Amino acid sequence: KTDILFVRSFMILFLSCITIKLNLCFSSNPSSLKSLSVDGHFSFDDINHAAKDFGNRYHYFPLAVLHPKSVSDIATTIKHVWQMGPASELTVAARGHGHSLQGQAQTHRGIVINMESLHGPEMQVYAGKFPYVDVPGGELWIDVLHESLKYGLTPKSWTDYLHLSVGGTLSNAGISGQAFRHGPQISNVHQLEVVTGIGELVTCSEKQNADLFHSVLGGLGQFGIITRARLSLEPAPKMVKWIRVLYSDFSIFTGDQEHLISEENTFDYIEGFVIINRTGLLNNWRSSFNPQDPVQASQFKSDGRILFCLELAKYYNPEKTDAVNAEIESLLSELSYISSTLFLTETSYVEFLDRVHLSEVKLRSKGLWEVPHPWLNLLIPQSKIHNFAEEVFGNILKDTSNGPILIYPVNKSKWDNRTSVVLPEEDIFYLVAFLSSAVPSSTGTDGLGNILTQNRRILDFCEAAQLGVKQYLPHYTTQKEWHAHFGSRWEVFSQRKSSYDPFAILAPGQRIFQKSI
Ligand code: FAD
Image (cartoon, rainbow, N blue to C red; front, side, top):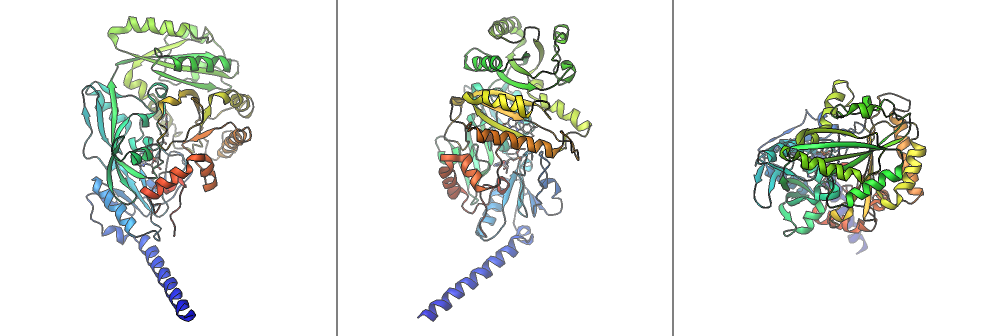
């Protein structure tokens, strides 16, 4: 009897090994994909682009890139990979606009789905009492803006840069200066169409398949590919008053920021940034921002001090210019900035929202766009922002920064705690974004190595001081770190993974789950 059992076990093991070997062989063999019937096409040679992202530090080469023409192309491909079973090492990464920082939209020897190829059905705006727009998951926000404006409408919540895909930002959160009021972009979605990790096409919303809906929002691409999204709209303004004022005292700066985000009648956009070791302020500011009163502004010299700049915007239509001026004057009178540092400019709504694109064009022309970007984005509880600033701005980055450092508070009440995003515990938390660019092959303070060391020092400090900080656009390399990131929400996150992508096919570049072989 023991012998029979032994022989049977041996046979099972032998057969499993053959199946695994066959699957592995099959999975790295393009011919299995070539035989799939899709409306678009796979490319097997032209794959270099899919191994690059904005971070410019990680390069994983896929086996193939799918350029889908229809949603069913995406479903067919994922179903095919799913049917190969867990033993196949083939994975699938949706690529929106590839503006990830650490290979999150890449896959080693897997399939990249180029979401920008998916254009049908076209965007559709529904004007009415509660207007919305239906858009393909690979659509860029700049195009969503232009389409909505044809109807005098606009999405409510933005990112600072609009050449990002809808599916890409909804997989993270989508945070900008409107988030204090409207919440992040994921708080402004009515409905999603998603292809799950088993190749099923599912429509989900608050009312229909709600668990999938909340899983996917901020879900780092782990539960499904967003093929269509229904986004909330509001009437669009034509113009923007864009204001910057300076502070040398961090407490007064954050006090004013927190005051402004707590008010009903306030600005439409509230952000801020840190200015380290800069002189000749006017020359250093972005070209799209032209202060209207340069005489007053130029009287101010920073003398190398660290300064904090509050950045505000008020939307308006030209026929209401007098009213908006009065409102701004009243709002500014409540603030305690350095009085000689009021910078004001007027611009169109589109130019304001698309402002970072101007910097992109400038940087590209100087070859400074496609450099390594070791960015670090942190969410910091309100009660700890002073400890953080003291150490980070007063010590770690005392003398230099290698790019803009954004800092602004948002209200947690505008976030839905059923989504997958992980946030600090407190009602108000700050987004602090270190948007560094590294000078290629430099070994100095502007080199990649030095910036990564600085980032590490910041993270180590946050951990040692137990600030309760969470990473935004998180990046970790071990499951232990991911556990710590999710904390008590890890169990729900991994249960959702088992439900919607049980073989861990999707978004392997996030390095949260590994497909079992
Ligand atoms: P990709 O890099 O293509 O993908 C990101 C992740 O989402 C990957 O894991 C990918 O597999 C997954 N994914 C992509 N498409 C889909 C889909 N349709 N369905 C499911 N999963 C998908 N973020 C902010 O919140 N606020 C900002 O102000 C902001 N400014 C930025 C400015 C610049 C210049 C850059 C480069 C980034 C900025 N970001 C900002 C970060 C940005 O939101 C994220 O990096 C976002 O993921 C980029 O979108 P993408 O389309 O390029 O995504």
